Length: 222
Image (cartoon, rainbow, N blue to C red; front, side, top):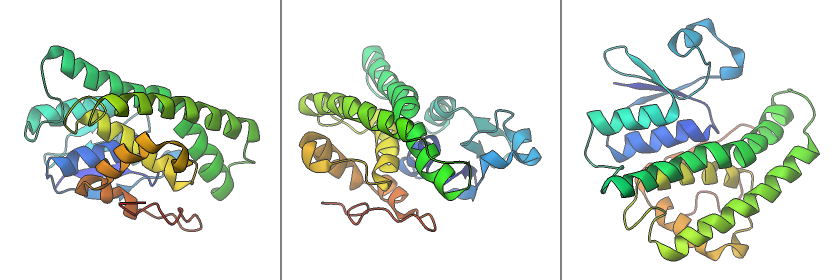
């Protein structure tokens, strides 16, 4: 059975978890505290970052989108990168936008300041970084609204890698209660839709000792 190295609120690891679940692959989850820089983990991925997927044959795969493309090749059904060249481009573009733009401008600040620093003794939270993440989040929610007004899912009529990437980041941000859902009805409508998928529901059972998500976090209709 494949093993996925992850940690609680890594959106990249959550993304790969969703892809594996969508493709109905049974896998073991192994918690990796990547900040500890374990030599055995560094041997799997010298970058020292999750996710790392170790397949049954012992081969280790790292790099979020590289893993996604690999899974699409070796487990083609159900497809999560679909359509013609332009449609597949749009899916890749949006997945990359979430992992790069949203990850850099929102999720990384949120997790670093509100989890690592506060609960793992890695220094005092930076209030300016938190304010910056809050401002950037609104910009990105406006863009998701734009997409959701025009498409059933973010890249088109079907659930794809783009939705998996978006939901992975949104689920992390929502764990901290940072989204005022009443202000973003179209984003909420899309999120309710993807939340109903088994692959996404599995993410919402994660809990961190001492850090409780808001009451609506796991509710499918909130």
